[in-house]
Length: 276
Image (cartoon, rainbow, N blue to C red; front, side):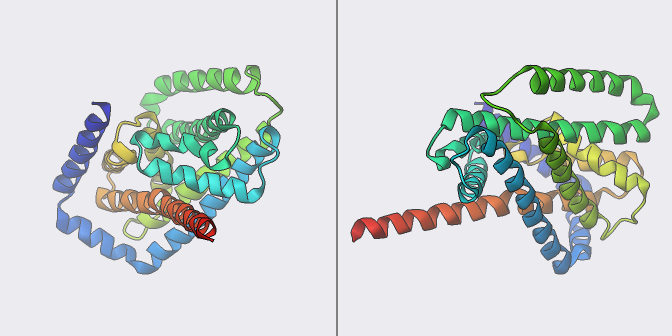
């Protein structure tokens, strides 16, 4: 029931966005992006995968030290593949399936990975919103307090089965966010003049999407947030919508596709060995 509700919501949000922005305007914005920028966007997505890999290796090193770099990358991409075919991308918690060991611990580490990135996203979005909309500073101050309390509880008081390099995890979480926000900024400035408002709008969009994980496969919410934020700042929303869709293709579909290719090749190799 919940899955279907999310699918309906994502479809409704995307349908409303296309109707509101008009297909002709969206096609014009897409045309301004061009193939070269889409290619570079894909390259940046690979950089983002590299950052995720480094962070995931760091988490595994302290908790599941027997997992090597190849295991870490395989489980990361395998989790992305599962995430593409599960509601709210919950399949990403199944990275441990591809490690073949310590599945419960791997699920916990995946949650730490996702939550640390989400905390940074919310923090950056709150700072940007603080600058853009002074009238919201009371609400944002409350959000900062809640976020700080959660971080204190989760990172300082709650102990895992071994030490975790929180400083390095936080640094890689910041880098991870900066990479993908820069990717969005690069795409959207194909049609919109680069200025401080656009720079600050990007983390707000990502933060809203993180706060409202309502859409199926993350679709619909980021696009609606992009339209809302850009329109409120007097910016053309069409480029933001197009950038949101391309971000989904590059950062969700690309890693998932790589994961499925790797899983498939391993299965074929195992079948070949079995036949021998």
